[in-house]
Length: 500
Image 1 (cartoon, rainbow, N blue to C red):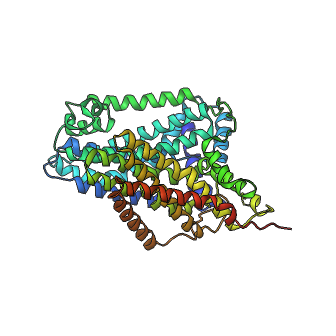
Image 2: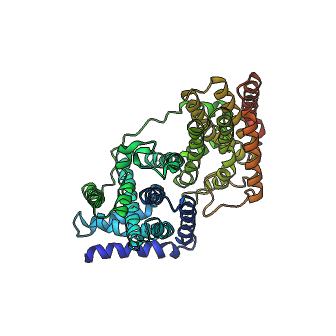
Image 3: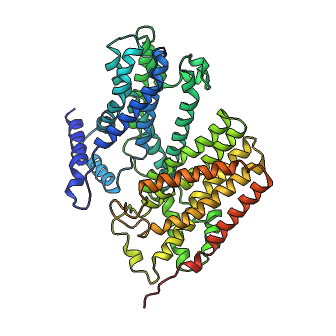
C-alpha cells in the first residue's frame, strides 16, 4: 500500500499543481462541472418525482443517468502525450508488481469520479427517501452504489480504449472514441424518452424487455435499494464486475506498444470531393489540413462529435413516438440541428492541440484569411455536414420514409447548412488548430445563437410541410445546387496574398 499511495499522491499532485507551473497553461477545476451536473441531476429527478412512483424505477432512471454521463466523460479524458510518457517512465523503472498500477489508477480515477458522481447523486438520493417510504438508510446506500456504478462504467470505457489503442493506433482509436460519445448520447436520449413513460410499470413493460433490463447494472442497484435482503445477490454481481475489470487491467499491464498496421494514405470519396472543389494550389493544401484535423484533433472531436448525437436521436424519435404530419415536422426541425451547432464548431475551430503550430502557416508564401475561410467552408461541408445529412437520409429511407421526403429534407438541410456556414465563417479570425489556449473570440452572442436556432427550427419545420410534394423536392435540389455552386466558387473567392 505504500507504493500504491506514492503513485496516487504523485498523480494527484500533477492533477492539481502540474499545469499551474506552466505560465501558458491555466489550471482547471472540477467545481463548475460538479455544480452543473448536480443541477442537471436535480432537474431530472424533480421532473420524474412522483409520490406514486415505483422505487425501483425511480432509482434505476437516476442511476442510469449518472452512470452514463460520468462514463461518457471518461471516453474523452485523453491524457497528454507528455503525461503518458512520464507515467510510462515512472512505472517501467519502478520496482513494483503488475498488480499495483491498476490499483493506483483505480484509486486516482476514483477520486475524480466520486467528486462528480456525488454531486449528481445527492438530489435523487434525497428524493428517494420519500419514494422509498421514508427509509433513511437508502440515501447513503444510493450514494455508494452510484459511485460504484459510475466507476465501473468509466473503467469499462477506459479498458476498451486501451485495447483499441493497441489494436488500431492512436488516431483511429480517438476518432472511434469521439464518435462513440455521440452515439452513446443518442442512445441515452432514446432510452430516456422511451422508458420514462413506463415508470409506473415493471421491467417487463419497458421497450427493451425484461431480459435486457435485468442485465443493466443500474437496475441491479435499484433492486438492492428496494429490497436489500431479497436481492442481495445483485451486490455480488456489482462486485464481480469490479473485480473482473481490475484483473483485466492487471493482465493488460502498461503496454503502450501498438500492433496496428499502417494504412495507406488514400484520399477516399470525401478526399476526391475536396479535390474537385478546391482544385489545386494553396486552397487545396489548406483544405486538406483542416479536413484531416477535423477528425484527428482530440480536442475538437471531444467538443464536437457528441453534439451530433442529439439530431440523430431526434430523427429516430420522430419515427417511434410520432405519426403523420407531427413526425415530418419533428424531422424537419431535427435536421436543422447541424446548422444550429455550426457557431460552436467555428468557435472551437482555431484551438490547437500542439504548441507553436501556427508557424507553419505564418511562414507560408500564400496565406490570407479569405483562403482560410474558404478552406474551412469546404472542409466543414464535406467532412461534417455531408456525412451527417447523408446518414440521416439513409436512416429515413431504411425506416420506410418515402424517397421524395428523405431526399428533399436531406438536400434542403445540407444546402441551407452550407449557405449558413459560408456566412458564419466570416467570424473566423485565426487559422484552424493553431491558437494555443482558449480561442473563444469572434463568436456570436448568446442572443444571436438563440435567434438563429429558433429561425432555423421554424424554417426546417415549415419546409417539412411541403417536403412530400414535387415543390419540396425541387426546392431541396435547388438549395443543394446553390450550396454546390457556392463551394465551387471557393477558388475565386480565396484571394491568396503571395508574399515576395
